[in-house]
Image (spheres, rainbow, N blue to C red):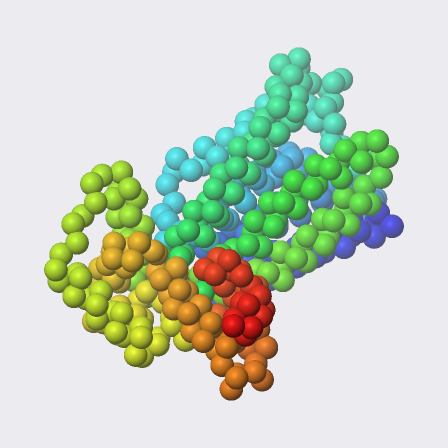
Length: 371
């Protein structure tokens, strides 16, 4: 059973690597390139076991082990380039892979493969090499895992806050599946403990195979996170930087002209109801008002005390409250009403409705139908 799983992991990881790298949708290209490298690291980490089970020559193991020191930083850069696709690569970033390079330099036959498992080769290396590689394997790897896990989690959380500044519906671009991968990686620790006591890798390999399929499926279906021209992407960066700056320094004063634009915005929201469009963005609304997205973001933040996503969703919920109590809309279920007012998922609609009203849509309907 384990040999079958090992063979499936080797084949599927290589196939998914190629599929994500040459993503036919051409979405999120920088992030997908790094993600394909992450999957390829999984392939390299497991190729020694594949060769062992199939009675093939394992050969030089340096690059198999090198991938173990690189896989976590690679996943970190995967997230970085999903949330910041225009980020320029700097030579200093190579320092993230320094421990893998140190392993190759000091390896000197200090590790070997026994029954498909990597162990320290105490009989064929210098004392320094042996202790140094023990230090890398038993101290650096766990510390690296904890550090990068925390950084990855923070980057996704920052991303989720940032996209609310320009998108009215965020569930398709919040990269929740990448956060789920982080939780899956943690679960591997639990299964590894089981493996230590049972020496049975079936559960770990089964979870790994399922994880690979999960990653491949979500990577292909992930829509473009920033489907905007380059000037709009630069404006997003400016908006994020300006809001961070205002949190630290004294806030910019709002002008009479800004207040007039805000009054015009309220009229547009009330009369034209652009919030009913599920694809409404800060840029499309700014275009309607014939102002820059940067200016609109500032005006909404200062005049309403809300970010763009909260501002739009407040109108959607008010509209939903009317539809829920409208007898003409009784043919619509909760999902239908959510779609009508601009949401594109039932869970987001219910969560947002409860956030604004402290009631679910059904609770709101029961409470107000009785009055």
